[in-house]
Image (tube, rainbow, N blue to C red; front, side):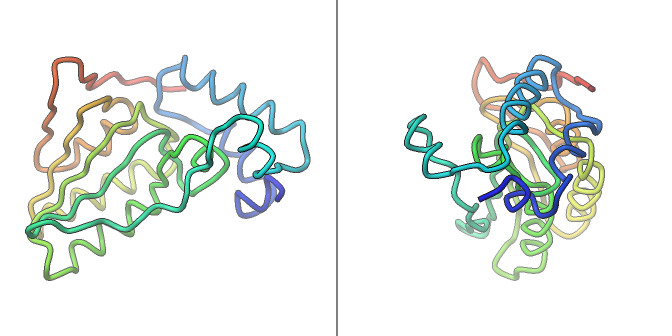
Length: 181
């Protein structure tokens, strides 16, 4: 499978890497190094990668689940507009996917409230403002809250802050750093 097949069309990932990010610089530097290593290879052998590294690439995300009328939408890792090589390797989250989940939960009569469970240091700027708007609009129809027990920073904080409230649990939760590259 080629990188282009994983990312939709040629150029998407390189365009993404050259775009604006709301993420701490040190994490962005890690992503740049990873991208550089894959950009040198015209093919990504997923089975070979998993065997060599022992890392299982992330499966497709499951839709939100509902427990006692509350929809849980989980967001972790790097936030990207669409699924790509980073979301496959690191289990990052597509803002496009979250948008579809929030809209579906708002329409779902079984859902009385929405919890965004976020553990992310941020991601690309592309898609972030749009998702934040969708979340804010959802608060006009149902209660929407953000919860983090890990990290909620940069683009993730931007998105999470659009909810009606932000809640954290644990003494070492990192919230609010705004990094822009």
